[in-house]
Image 1 (cartoon, rainbow, N blue to C red):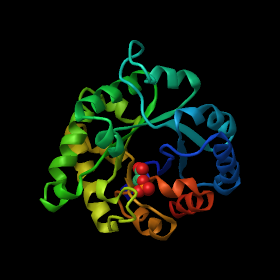
Image 2 (image 1 turned 180 degrees about the vertical axis):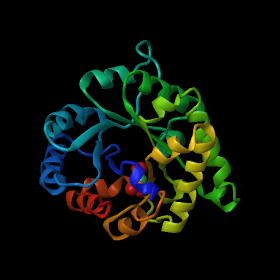
Image 3 (image 1 turned 60 degrees about the vertical axis):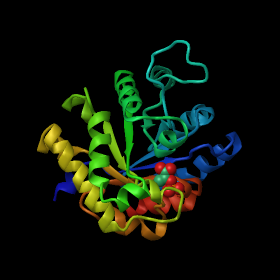
Image 4 (image 1 turned 135 degrees about the horizontal axis):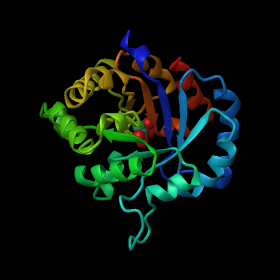
Length: 254
Ligand code: PEP
């Protein structure tokens, strides 16, 4: 079964949540609950929690990620953080192209491509988010939208570099809304993304690519979503803020 060819990864996206004490409490609670996880566990946290997360995750099976990075190495970009700065701290992953960045902060497919380039050059692993908004799904153009987002974001990425990329399929209408895509809808688009990657690179590269589903994944629906052939993990927002819920999703990935 092709699913065994790739690594299952469950990543939490904390968004703009958790002060330092809350971060410490959550990671300390999570550690014993996920220590025997069968998948890779990643915590993507606000910049202000990176140091805390890095120190508490050291020696555990939890990996640390940021939620964004800038495309330049350094320079006059007030308020921004470069991929190099993250890598220097010991951060391993970075989320790029999350729909909230596209929606509220002017992120475009071109800036996503530039950030992916910078992250790879800095040695980071990328969780690249793609997904359609409700109107696009209703117009029947989901495949066109995710194909374009994927192709532009991966422009200039070599097949060797693709091994440091995870794609998260996140239908925007399902993020933070409590509306989950059905397991069949998630599978259909994840399989489609894999076919796009196979055409861009090779079948072997596509088979090895981890593709996550994200959008209101919870303990109650995780097992069904994660059992699908082309769904190799999850990007989890709200449920990643509650240790027992996040741990239950990780368990469902077994
Ligand atoms: C996300 O932020 O990537 C996400 C999937 O959020 P939620 O799980 O809350 O829908």
